[in-house]
Length: 248
Image (cartoon, rainbow, N blue to C red; front, side, top):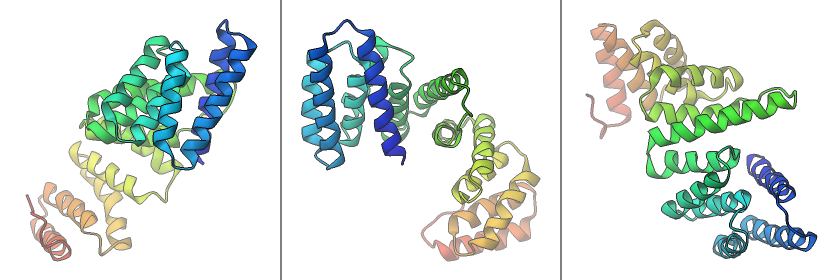
């Protein structure tokens, strides 16, 4: 569903961009045909061919941020990280408020370069643009799609207070996402909100007794509260589930 929404949004953004440019009707038709071809190639898994189509289209219409963004998405999927970053930056040089360019660039930094500070910068911008767009259209702001990416970037950047705020939103919106509860528990632990951390992680210990990751967080929370015997038992359980894992 997210893939469909993203491609549709890119197409709508392209349509807006074309209407704002002084191009002929023939140009609009040509761009749409090439765009549709690249979209079909992407959906069929032919990413190299989609890349070729979009690079040619971008060379013909270098001032279209939508084309550069779509190209950036394809390059990201092909793990051509530096080129993906360059394509998205080209889109943002044309229009710094291009929501999807901020998104693709932020996700490239988050998932591929692990440059979490840069990921935070662009994913925050994406979220701000998303909120502004929905408010302008009197629509309810949907947080889950945006909050999870931003929260992960903040977590990676060790901005635990901000990350905790975002994970709290996501846990409310998607209470079945236990991974994000684990992330929230770590944020609380780092912020010394130890009772809150325990309240989050203890139910996960009961629900997932064979998860060494859950036991590790639980043990760390107990240790931080100087509950040494309980922490030792939890670490022992953690080691039994993951013998190769080291306990700090």
